[in-house]
Image 1 (cartoon, rainbow, N blue to C red):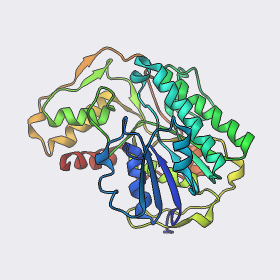
Image 2 (image 1 turned 90 degrees about the vertical axis):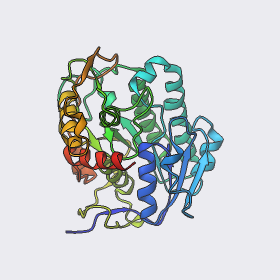
Image 3 (image 1 turned 180 degrees about the vertical axis):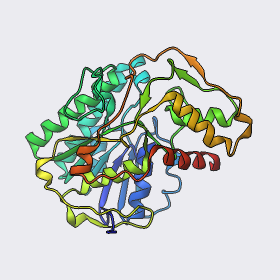
Image 4 (image 1 turned 120 degrees about the horizontal axis):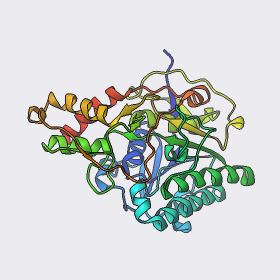
Length: 349
C-alpha cells in the first residue's frame, strides 16, 4: 500500500485547540513535524487536553478569544493553514443563550476568516455541522440538500458556510467546510450540562448509574470516531498542495492519496462521518456490552427514558461519497472499533 500523505513541516493554526477535536488535531500535527499554534480561551476547552503538548518546542499556546480580531491576527501570522474548530457547540446551549452562540459562532468565525485573508493563509478549513440539515427528512444526508435549521446553533453553522463561500469569492481565500456528524473519541469531556451522549453514557455506566435517553431511543446518529476527523481535516487542507505534505508516521493507516484539482471544490462543504446509522438504544446496548468486559456491576443497568430534546434532528445519516471522491477520505475506524478505542481510553484516564 502507498503511504498516506498529511500536513508536515509547516506552520498551522488550530483554533479551539484545547477542545476535544482541536487538541487531537494539535497532537497529530506535532507528531508529523509541524509547528502548531493553538488558540483557545478555555471557555469550553480544557488545559488537561494539551498538558502533554506544552513542553513541545513546536507548540505555541495563545490564550485568547476569536471574538477579538487583533488576537485572531496575531494567532494566524505566518501560518499556511487554519483548522478552525473554535465554537460554542451544543443545540441546548444555543437554545438557552442564543446571543452567545451567534456572537462566537458567527462573529468569531468572521474575525478568524478575515484575519486569515489579511495574513495570506493558503487554506481555511473549518468545522461545519450536520445540524445544518435541519428538518429535511431524507436519508442519507447529501451536501446539496438541506432543510430549515432547528436551533440557533444550527443557524450559526449554516451562516458560517455562507460567509466562507462569500469570502472565497470576494477575497480569493480557499475555504473548505467539514460537516461533522457526532464526533466521539479520546479527550471528549463526559461532564457538564452539554456533554455529548457517548462520553456521558460511558461515564454514567462506569459509575454504575443509568443513562437518560431523550425520547424513546429511536433517534439515530452517524457517530464518527476522532481519527477519521483528523484524517479528513488534513486531506481538506492539502488537496492539491503537494509542497506541504509528507509521509505520515505509523500512527496512521496506509492509504493512497491521489490529488484532484482543488480549484473546482473550494468554498464547498463535505460530510464527515462513517456513513452508518446507530439508534440511541443500539448505542446503549453496544456500550454496555463493551463495558461488561471491564465492569461486571453494570449487567443489570437499564436506560432511563426522558422527554425529547428541543431542536434535535430525529435521524442523522451521512452520504460520504463526495468526501471519498474529492478528498479521498477513507474512514479507518467504524463505529464499533471507535467505541472500543474510546472505552479503553476512558478506563485508563
